Image (cartoon, rainbow, N blue to C red; front, top):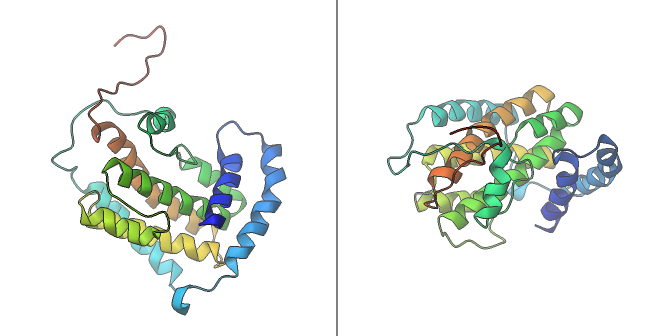
Length: 224
């Protein structure tokens, strides 16, 4: 967990909107060195995964999740603009997303280093899962693994079985990338496409999941 927290802090600098390219260059070497410590860790139980197969499965699952009708308890309401995602999370007492839920930041990073992009996505998924737990008032421990957290969320009905399976596949791929399994740019982009489905549904939940009368920020000079 300590390594993940340190990676998150660096990624906030690398990915956060408006940060100058020069700053990312300054922090790139320390982040790579930090990830090397993780990459040399053995997989739990020595288990290896077929990365290509996992990515393919994630793509199929993401389509299934995207085509699944919304839950019956979902209320109609205004959609939250991506630009207001983090301010909404802060308003709700949740942890802001490292990317602001904008997968283009990880895509840009994947153009430079696919493994690094998936390291960032790994932390993103953990942040969003813990926010869901808080929003649904599900008690979780700080040391709970991502997979265990997803199972807990599913057990209380916070996420569907397909959402849990998709997020689990993504975690497995990201963990493999962090530990040094080579990931091509094309593969990383496919993973990010699959993750975007969950990010979009999470963004919708920030609107319908709370009864606080939220309304989008009005731009001066507009009506409605």
